[in-house]
Amino acid sequence: MIVGIGTDILQLPRLIAAYERTQGRLAERILGPQELQVFGQRLARNQRRGMAYLATRFAAKEAFSKAIGLGMHMPMSWRAMQTLNEVSGKPAIHYSDLLAQWMAERNWDAQVTVSDEQDMVIAFVIVSVS
Image 1 (spheres, rainbow, N blue to C red):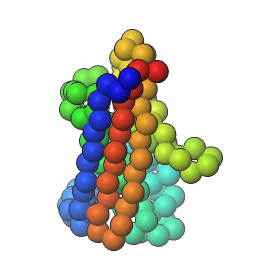
Image 2: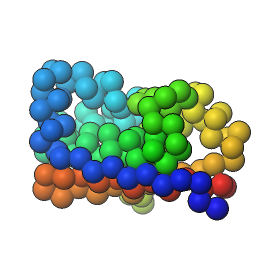
Image 3: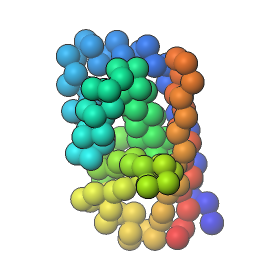
Image 4: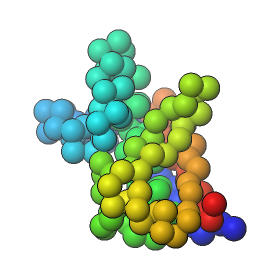
C-alpha cells in the first residue's frame, strides 16, 4: 500500500550558485557521510557531474520529506536520509538515527529515482508499507 509520494525538481544553476555562495558548505550541510564522500570523488573528476550529484541528492531529500508527510522536521533532517547507489547503479534510500527508527515503527519503506538533464534535476519517491 502506498503511504505517500513526493517529487522535487530543481534548476542546477540555482544550486550551483548556492554552493558557490556558501563556499562549499552547502554540501556539508545537506549530504550524509557516504554521500559526501561520493560527491567529493565525483567533483574531483568532473565538476559538472559532481554538482549534478549534489543536486539530485538535494532533490531526493526534498521528495522524500514530502512523501513521508513531515517536510524537514524531526525525525527527518538533511543528513538522516541518504540516497546511495547499489552496485547495479540503482539509487536506494538509507536512513540513520531517529529516522530509521521512525520508518521501522511504521513498517514503511521508500523507493527513489533521480534524473538530471542539462540544467534540471528531478527526484521522485514512493513510500509504502513494507
